Length: 430
Image (cartoon, rainbow, N blue to C red):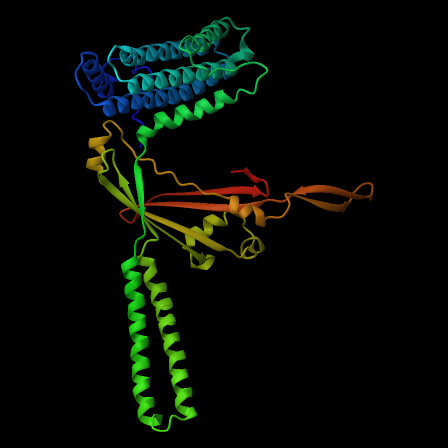
């Protein structure tokens, strides 16, 4: 799911975090007073609060970077410094609000799982804040001779160092050490991101659809084959059965061969026309309580380029305008389709505040790489001035076109094309 969007400047307000903080506070207070509570709800709230903070920092960092860059280009140092100071204040107050919510988990009687969840939120938020402040320092460090910029640098440096000391004081080991490999730091980033982002993920199970339909096709083809075999047997028996001659045996063998072909051809041709209506996989999408929220029907097939829609062919060949470039590229197209059906009302009940669904599509180029030639090739030519024979290296690359077409109720709403330039080592550029 898409993380709920809350501006960083608003995140310090009690009302902005109330949709998630209220459940966390009430559950933690129940445990602290010796009463029972729903640990899963409180843990989910803490994770979602971290996702809200991450989303707010990401958006605000992008905006302030653009504003500061524009101000630097105009040599308006005062404006750039003001943008940075405002951002630093917003980030600091947002962190303070998150701590007011999460630090309640330190009360006596609160389950260990909620303590650990809060520590993960605390560590991750600190890393995000330090990363953002550090990146902004990098952006403006070349203008440190300006008083307004120098002041902003000092403020951001101070905030980044404060977050470093905060993590060390809390016993976290997620900080860099000079002269070491720092494997733990990068690993810890991924662990925290996966754990806290898991609140936005929907569970899925996979079924194999079309089994009954495929069996019915095979049964129908077998019935047709058996009907032919039985009819042929009766005709042959009436004609040659009395003598059991070679003609009788040959006719029986021929009828069996024809019967077998009728069965296989029936399965093949009927399946070819009917498989387009049968999905390869059906993925059931489940909510937190394993309630069915919807399903995704997936299918995959290979088709020649000339069987693709005209707009698809045009987009795949965009940039190759000459006939030899277009027609000289025979190819088969890998076609993947997904029909996604979601119960929006049930989603809203389980994910309050989330206003979108992110469906990740991954394309793995690795299976193609072993079939590619070396990424460098030698090229010989005559130098136009010295007339000498020269040799140079040329990069050998391949273009992999990906077209994404999104439909809503059979009406196209978006179409994207990505061309990945790859070589034997992997992706060169997009």
